[in-house]
Image: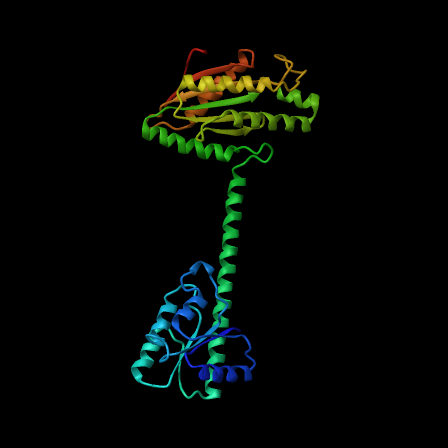
Length: 338
C-alpha cells in the first residue's frame, strides 16, 4: 500500500516515516506544500482514474491556507474521493475536528504522534481503502457482467428475428414489422405495399439437385432480395418454405410494381440452373403485389390476402410474372397488370 506524507517539516516527515517503516510500510512518498500535493495527485486530471496513493497523512497547520482546505479540495475530485486522509495537528480544538470530518478526513490525530495510535489509525484507514477498492472492483465486475448479459440478450433477440437458413428476417419479424408499419400508414394516411414472392417449381428443383443445393438456392435468393431493397424501412423476410415477402412502407401500387419487377428480374439474372423448370432454364420467381391506404377499421391481413391472391394469379398466368392488386379494408380488387 502506498502512503503520502504531507508536512512542511522535514523532521516530522522523517518521524512519521520511521513509524511507518517499523510496521513494514515501505511505499512512502512526500510533499511539502499544497501545489506539490495537487501535482502528485494529478488533481486536474480526473481521466487518469487512479493515482496509486492509498492513504494521505496530512498536516493541518504547515500547509497554506490549512490542511483542512487541502483535504476538502482533494475530496472534491471523484477520482480521489476514496483515498482516506488522516489529518494531524499540534493545535487541537473541537472546531478543527468537526471541520476535518466535514471536509472528508477519516481520522484526526494529535502531535506529538504516538507510534501505536498512528499505526492503529493507518491500519484502519488502509483497511477501509482496501475494502473500498474491493467493492468498486465488484461493482465494475457486476457492471461488466450486466453489460455482457444485455449484449447477449440483444443478440438473442436479434437472432430470434432471423431465419436460421437464409439469415434474413423470419416470419415472426415480418408479422411484427407489418403490424408496426400498418399502424403508421393508418395514422399518417400513407400507402403501404406488400410483395409476396414464390420460387417457381422449387420442389422440382430440390428433387433434381438435392436439398443442399435447394438450401443454397434459398440463400442466394434471400441475399438478392435484401440487396435490391434500398430504403432502410423496407423489409425482406422469409415468409415460409420457398416464399419470401417484402414490406414497402409509404409505397403505392406503381412503386411496388416497379420494385417487384426489379426483384423478379434480379433473381432470373442470377442464372441458377433449373433444368426441371417449365418456364425457364434458370431459377425464376412469381410475385404478387398488393397496396392499400389503411382504413380506420382495416387489418393488415387484408393486404396479405390480396398479395397472396395476386401471387396465385401470377402462377396461373404462367409463372415468372408479377401480378398486382389494390387491397381494401374488406377485400381486394384487381388492378390491371403493368
